[in-house]
Image 1 (cartoon, rainbow, N blue to C red):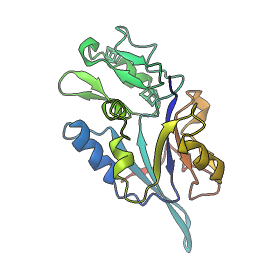
Image 2 (tube, rainbow, N blue to C red):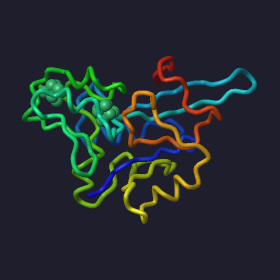
Image 3 (cartoon, rainbow, N blue to C red):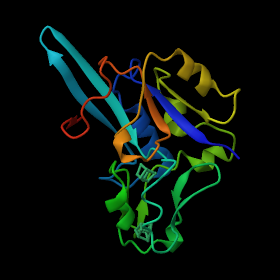
Image 4 (cartoon, rainbow, N blue to C red):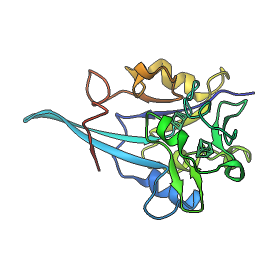
Length: 195
Ligand code: SF4
Ligand code: SF4
């Protein structure tokens, strides 16, 4: 059993969206939808301006509100902490879309709810998720929070800051952001501009 998590070092993210493109190719994400997207927000005022580039996707919450609302069990959490959808059981009621505070889910035109899987199929082959492998700045790392050998722990130990989106929701995200450009943490979730 593992407790899979992903870290993104925002000090190193340049917002190139290579991760988003890799995800589309890897997971055959239908046109007009995204399992992963980048938000961009300017912080501060001239001449002291910083830009936050923030990749967003399913956070594979430890306490995922998208799971208990599902009437069929399609939306579920694995023993390894992945939050997944069994397409064949999904009746497209969209209850999980409404329950996710992060807009991480979308309706696949094929008739089921779709979202980031942390590239479960690649993990099964011992590979990193496509977004992690593709990132040209190496700002993403994937691993097992319960494994002391996982590189996650060195990244966490060296980070100046560790933030999660909307901690007040109590979802215990397992997508963590390191080293936000602003010393005050992540840019406001509600008012940012999508790139
Ligand atoms: S980010 Fe949304 S879809 Fe992903 S586990 Fe959390 S609540 Fe569920
Ligand atoms: S849309 Fe599908 S996965 Fe989501 S709650 Fe309804 S049946 Fe479950």
